[in-house]
Length: 144
Image 1 (cartoon, rainbow, N blue to C red):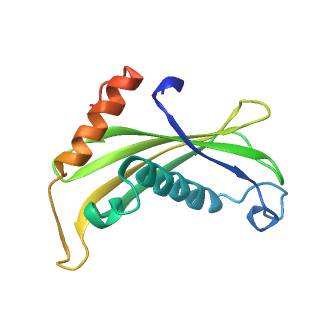
Image 2 (image 1 turned 135 degrees about the horizontal axis):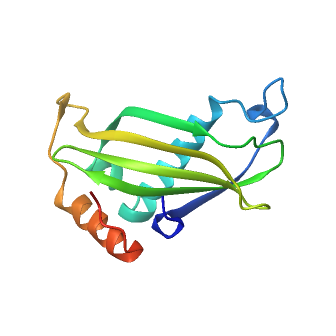
């Protein structure tokens, strides 16, 4: 994953509640960090009403733990659109330690556009496709 392909959307400081008995961020907490990246990305790209216009549901998440993060570490949350399908899309993530620049986590997720009221999927909106294509051009990394 090219560093330039990521949109760096959030910076967080590891809190006491995030730490496990071993003194590092608990593995389950990273799912919340990924959610923060998704929500911040969506809001930045599509505004406050973006989720209302283009709701999605999470289908799958894969996480690769690379290094430990500890209490009070500052972490940058990076995200990029990796794939756009007919009704679904994929994100890739990188979480890195601000002080050292080291990668802490690499992850990916699949989302499906989903109408919560009708309880059914729908095709990826043109607004989303256009944004994904623009971001890919800006990062000089084509969406597969």
